[in-house]
Length: 233
Image (cartoon, rainbow, N blue to C red; front, side, top):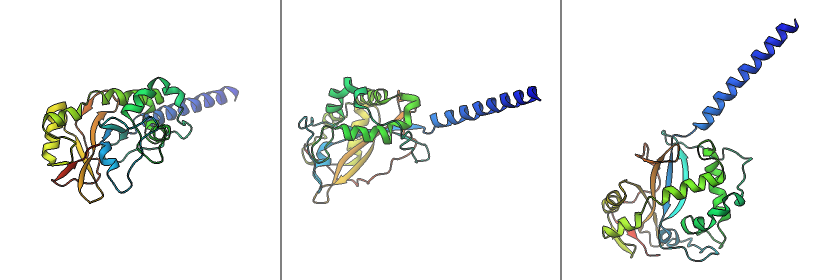
């Protein structure tokens, strides 16, 4: 009886380990790719809600990171995957300078950015812990990927400048494609007068967070039309 009980216990433990292992693999693969989202600050500010510069001062007139978001090929996405993993700023202490310059917040009231980064980590970053690790790995990956995308220079080289002028969607996409070798998805918002303006650029990254890939699905967002303002900042 004792031997039979021991065998049953061992069998139960073995089955439990298999189930846990499968669940772990499923969790690790609960997304297929990332959207790296870059935001033009002039368009964020040129709306009815306006904006507030962070406590560190006015950000550079360049596309800042909005987020690195795990997504699935069917258009859905995981979120808030680890409620116990609250953002710990001490884990990114060596990245704070880069985060302030490359991932600034423009939300009001003026703040130091920690609340914004905490939101991005807790909603999105926790869903990529298996691939990118903790906060440091997540934010470092986003900063590294951002450094490979000189999108503002690509736009300027093609004559698409943030001077309040208007451009076509084809001009914007073509300029980025020629300059960085990737075609972005372009999202627009509306200024106070209702004009469509260049707001965000979406690029797709493989599930490991290492390399850019063709986007398997559109992120949605507000369409742009064919007359797009590129406001100054």
